[in-house]
Amino acid sequence: MIKIRPLTQADVEQVLAITAASPEAAAWSRQAYQAFLDAPGRGFCRVAEQGGTVVGLVCVRVIGEESELLNIAVHPSARGQGVGSQLMEQALREAAQTGANRMFLEVRETNAPALRLYERLSFAVSGRRPGYYADPPADALVLQRGLVKETSGDRAPSQFA
Image 1 (cartoon, one colour):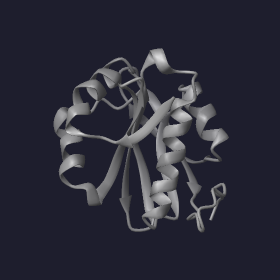
Image 2 (cartoon, rainbow, N blue to C red):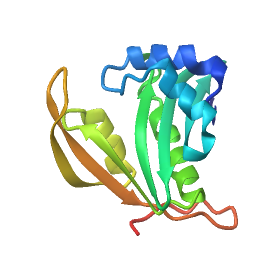
Image 3 (tube, helix red, strand yellow):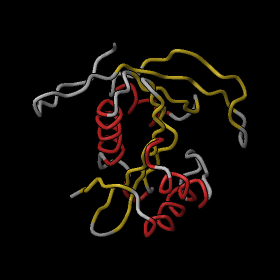
Image 4 (cartoon, rainbow, N blue to C red):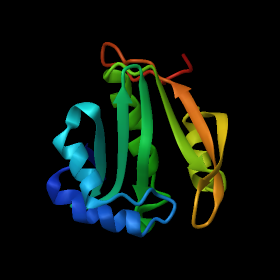
């Protein structure tokens, strides 16, 4: 069973190991995660835990009515089990609850598994950033979708605003 919970200081080493094993993820420093722990009002990081081990993470920045997916990674041993979907669904819910009405992200145009996930979650391409990624060089696709705040405990799907 997967448990999604807030990132804690004790998780940082495991999170660094996950991103090191996930070359398609943003390689954040220990200080970057610490910044999220020190300033929770600027966004949030959540981890997916399975059997007491952190197997994934998602970090989102929220500024006013916009939210940006900054980082998502799932340990290779936990891929294909719905961990990324659960992390993203939690991130979408939380971003909407903070007042954001849309989420956007950049993704390597060659990252087919991530593109399939975002398509299933109703993200649509809204732009391209040529040369955004290095090592290896690649363009980024900019994707976005609208968010709808849940009411009365309903889990209605988010839709384009």
